[in-house]
Length: 116
Length: 112
Figure (cartoon, rainbow over the protein chains, first blue to last red):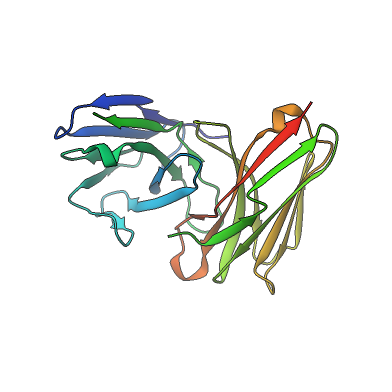
């Protein structure tokens, strides 16, 4: 299957700093990318959907000023957690799909963020 | 938001037995997908079944979809220790095409 590379795989940062997570589709052009958050032993919660060249669509309850998403090209989307706090510590996963309807999404390996 | 609920939440079976996981969802869908996640890792896509399909097979996996009941099942036959993982169903809602919403997941443990 297609490959989605997410970087970094883990990061520890101090409270109040910002962290950027990158998501790249390596061998296909991703018209849509998704960002999810996952707490331990829980499911993936969709944070936002982004289409190349347009603003991300955030899910209800997700602060767009807190979680900045940029989808500048068909192969790269970034999630920046601004002014991180310990409660932002979580596992963040991106996924990408080449088409729209009825196409599978490919997932990155996830980023474990720990805010101290 | 979560679209679906899965049951059981956790399942432990003996190697060689079959494992069945169920998923129920709330709204009309374009398709339903099953994913697998090993602890602390990303997700691996298993099967996509479209809303006009009723059953799909892939190796030891069999997926059914009943749109009238808004439910799906994943059957893993002849389970192996390596099948130990969390399994999630995910739906692409009809009203929100391009979104993929995940269910609550089933943690499957295969005892050797």
